[in-house]
Image (cartoon, rainbow, N blue to C red; front, side, top):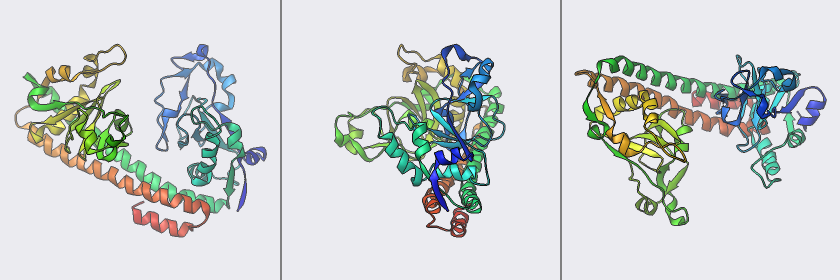
Length: 403
């Protein structure tokens, strides 16, 4: 086992390191090389959701900054520390300047997956944390900082063993996430087969559910914050792997709940973001309050929960058309209450409710298992990287966790 800097590995021809392409306004187009941005690197995956492209005529100028299968990506500005490996099938994409990439040139010396896990370990993050502190600007790690980072390079077989153990956990997490997504799509597909036989009867959303909103306690009063009451914001919703809210990034106290206009919504409420990003949906699994960026729907009849949820999902574009606002778009509760409700055909509601609840329960279970798997991975990672835990023992722990 040896220790060296990433820069030394680059000088030795083992590794290529680079940052992203600084695109000029005149180079932007509607087609060409899709720009991979920080937001596209999430949960170890690359989503390729960016709508921005660099004109293909600038391919020569882009050079090595074109996304290549197996590249290890690290977000280095703003949100620092997200890591992903470029998968197969990514073509004609270019990295943004907020990303750095590592391209293994000699896999006999360093394994790309091992490198990706090392970038997530305390061995690196303790160094990058110091680097971020060198600037008064947004968190940022420069290319020169990365080159000076010291990495432990064990034998290739040990690197592969570490990567396989941690990778097995990540693969199971990815499999569970994909399963949950497919289940949700399946229920949505069932809704779509019933919807054409449904009808508008003059019933409004306000007639079938309680429609509420939320609020924010005064941020200047510390006694309102960091209590035991979950308090959701739209950011909590967009971060979900599936439409089930079981925790929030911030909490408030009982006094904070009393001081804001949100109720404490019991499990089973349908939460929909209603500002800026409109139409992100989830059902709360734990009692939670919400801020003012939500419309909360509590069905009068429990059987309607998933019918309403999937109807709202199917009508997201329609809801957006009802939004207005000078600063940002917002769908008001008043407008939503008056929107017509699509009533299912006679005899279909009970069947759909049972079908949807059963499948959503399976999806929730898969995503809940991810929490245990991620905790096991995060526990094993620093011990494996430091050599305090042998791969054989880590394999047993990963197997016990379900990987």
